[in-house]
Length: 187
Image (cartoon, rainbow, N blue to C red):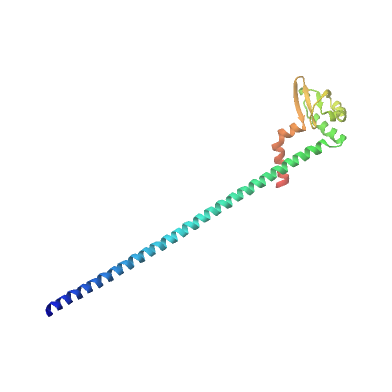
């Protein structure tokens, strides 16, 4: 039986050696798999970090662009508000000129009117007395009728009226006036 025991011990020793060898190979394979997985995970982390940084940069750029657009809109709105104020102030000053200067301005306007448009001049009730002389001097007739206008006049030829009131002139010429004022104020 001794020989049987030696054979069994040899089989067990060979089996132990095979198990150790299989375990060593499995550990080596598992280590390689873990190392490959760790390398892959590290590459994925780096790719994710890069993608996150790029996305962050895009978001920041978009926010900056939006803020710049809002700032430009605010500046434009403020410029438009200032231009409106300038036009309103100019109109107020024009209307409140002293009688002699106001009559002079209206006289120059009447000088530029083609009399074929008509010769009857309609003014605001408040301007009736201060413009009567200049209207007649320029060869026009002051109408008995008055119109509710802030300043300026209306030329009437029968049923046709040509509006030269300051409100009408400013309304028609507003864009050009704003461009001139913008050049003066903002350039």
